[in-house]
Image (tube, rainbow, N blue to C red; front, side, top):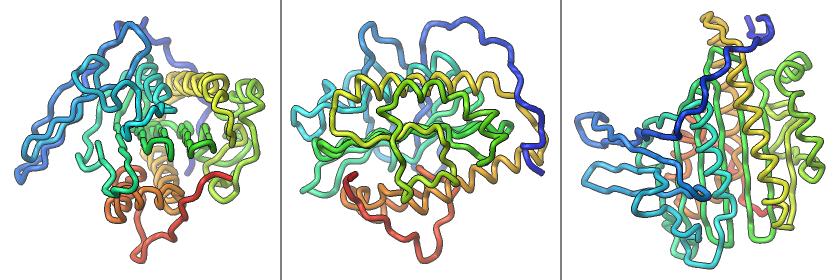
Amino acid sequence: FSPQNFHRSSQSPKPSPMMTLRLTWLLAILASSIALSNVRSFRTTRATNTPTMVATEVHQSNKIATEISRQSQRKIFPSKESIVGEKQPLTFIEFLNFSIEKLEEEIGLKALPMNPEFSVKHSINPAKKGKIVNLNFKADGIRRIRMTYFDGGSAVQVFNMVAYPEYNTDAPIFGADLISFGQKNLAGIDFQPLYPNIEYSDKYINRLKPIKNKYPELSQSMSAKFYDSAKFFSENMLFCRFENKELIEGKLFPAFKEYINAYISLVKSVRKFEHINFRKSVQNRHIAYDQYNAERDPAHGMFVQYFGNEWAENFIDKFLFEQSVRPENGYPKQPHKKPE
């Protein structure tokens, strides 16, 4: 039984007009011996100028809460400057800001519970200052959206985002990986197919061709080591290595916006199927996606260097790819290296 046997998707009713942007962030974790029951509510409002990501980190005995708000009192990344105190911009912070705002406007965001160990983490290596911030949401038609921003100063900047649709649709998984190692930069943005066949591409992936054709600078050959075209990567993936930072604002950000908008349109219009066998088949593909990526995650080595091996493995297993199962002897370790 496969979702491929179902009819093509049809248009769903148009969404109601956009309401005033607001968010109630439910992102509180109670790590007590009783239960994870004391959930706090948080609120995000639209800023009048370019949106910035801000947060309040609350530490009170066993309670840890993170508030994402454009008008809160302390910023996760003050003045958009790196945590290491350099005059180092947070290279991809506007990608994160746009993603949060656009998704909330179009399909609504609700924060999912998250282990406080993963919400905000500072480097434990005195020689490598850095900070990682993780966000965990769901939205209409999307069962999970995770976002990660890693700030390692001029040495490394990373924004990673993955959106998993609900199990009642076989729509692709949205994935974006934006990395800067000093002057070396790498970007990958894709609708990651659940089924690598022509019918699936015609149904979901080929709609990206007109967008991709607008950005030849972002259409380089992918590295077969990490991007196997037969395993959850599409022919319309945007992929590039570059050194010219102007490409980020001039080409990469506009292309990212177009891919996000196209994905939101897909999620809104895709046909839903509630048959138990359909849902199980899709769930199995999501599990396979997590397993495939957990086994090959090239960031493992970097996480170990900054946060230690135990935290790195828990982070991969329990946050990044939470449906994966680590072998008893562990995964083969991928070396941490700058893009060629």
